[in-house]
Structure formats: C-alpha cells, structure tokens
Image (cartoon, rainbow, N blue to C red; front, side, top):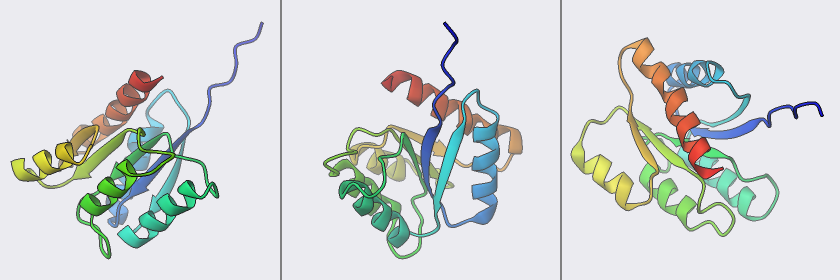
Length: 141
C-alpha cells in the first residue's frame, strides 16, 4: 500500500513586519512538512479571519503564530479571542515576539499561549521557530 502524501499544514501568521514574515516562511520551509502560510498584517485582519473560521467560511488553522505588537488590535486581544473560539479554541498558538519581558511571557501563558518564541536577531536562531511548530503539531496529533 503506497504511503499517503503528507497533509499540508495550515499556519495563520499575524505579523506586521515583512522581514519577520519572510523569516517565518523560511523557518517553515526547512521542516519536513508542507505549510500553507496565511498572513494577516494587522490585528483587525487577523480578527476577521478568526471570525470567518467561527462561521465556517474558512477552516481552522493547524497552528497560529501571533505577534503581540500588531497595529489595530494587539496580540493579547487576539490570543484571548482565539481561546474563546467555538471551533478553534484548542489550536496551538505560538506567541512570536521581540519582547523579552517576563510580564509579556506571563500574560501570554495566562491567556492560553502554547509557546512563546522570542524573535532573535540571528538568522539561525530564528530558524528554530520551525522546530517549535513541528514539536507542537506532533504533540496534538
């Protein structure tokens, strides 16, 4: 019996920095899975996407990568909203932030983040994000 082709992983990325979007895409491409990256450049776009998931217009993503410092709606609001979603409340959410503040980490954990990834300035360190996503996905399957 032939091995089934691996399923494409749906990743929602809420990130306003084009350079960071590029790095996230690179990190995911280095993983042994295919990832479809849906990018929302501000909190309002991400909120609309979540609302469209809840109405069944778009499928629930397999994982969410969420910047805390987004224009229009911040990541904390979106994290809280995702955890209230009737369809996607259990989706792994990785907060991807430049903040090293313990308070931001504590807030993310309290609001239900699955993981917290501090954006490094080094390319190789940033590529570790793909492994974080792979590990989260393997723990929910």
